[in-house]
Amino acid sequence: MGPTRQYRVQRVNRAAIESPMFDGAVLQPVAQVHADEYQGNVPFSHVVLDDLVPAEVVQEAIEEFPGPGDIQWNDKTHEYSKKAACEDMSLMGPSIRRLLFEMNSGVFIDFLETLTGISGIIPDPHLRGGGMHQIRNGGFLEVHADFNYHERLGLHRRLNLLLYLNDDWREEYGGHLELWNADLTRCEKRILPVCNRMVIFSTTDTAYHGHPEPLNCPIDRARNSLALYYYSKDRPARELSTPHSTLYRGDAVGRKAGLMKRLKAVLRRFWNKT
Image: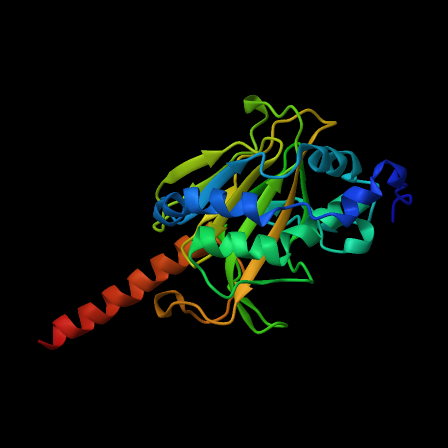
């Protein structure tokens, strides 16, 4: 484990902590304005919102965000990923903890329900798979569809929220979030992870997304973000499937090829009998 991170807690204003970060009277009009856009967007329901979080809160979160040796990160390096993550709130600074709490609050859940048209949204207090994410130079995350069921809570995963915490992020650094079509034949949208940009999207078995191109930022920079996932007791019948873990593009393409091969074999057997 790296050295203990010393957070500058004296910079956090107590009055600000005790007052709500989000005002429903402000959030609800934003949700209403963007609801049709969210629900009609392609390749799947999503929206990109800039500067929704107060600038001073974002700046404090950026200053608190730990480097590679500051905490015990969960190393997510494997065939389809080269990134680090932390869902342990005890390792996060006060501004980041407050931000996560506020985005799991009733006011913010009301905002999400109005925006997405999904009722009965439930936050995850355990931040399974979420929390702080960090990708450094050369890192990537292959295009994938997310796990669809939270076994501990017994709930269906419905929404992803990503908040980027990258000051002065340049186009040439890369790190775009890519949204792909259901057939995995085309990237439909690329979203640069600039500071205080929030991306919210519906999670289904065909909501393919990722950061597949290796990051090209300076060695001393990183693509930092907060991730929150939201759930519900039920989901539409058309979206139901057996609970599964992350479906990466390579696995998904192979699985589809296998299904087509088996289908062709069945058709051949049927044809030979006629």
